[in-house]
View (cartoon, rainbow, N blue to C red):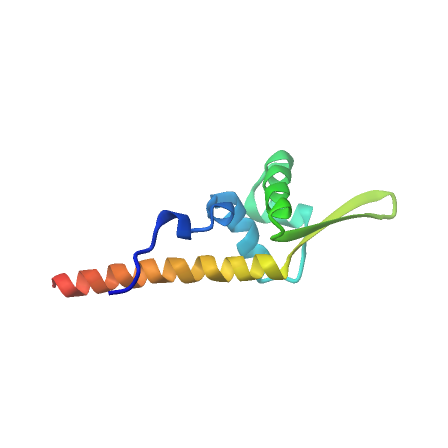
Length: 108
């Protein structure tokens, strides 16, 4: 029998629903602007700022601030560390689902 999956095996930084949505969106785009993410995910400025700060502090995303003309322009992208963490997160979820499927099939 394989090792049990413990709650600590699930990345708590990514697992929070807003951060999961941010990471998932960035996993399929080279980068997104703050406004694109905010609109795509239906978040407030403060909510996106707080969650992106947590991801940035974990080293999962890079937040780049610049100006386009006189207007501030913030972009975000997933780092290699963030991409690997997201891949591990998805693999852990797949293991949980696969074991659940196996348990259901074994009990049938």
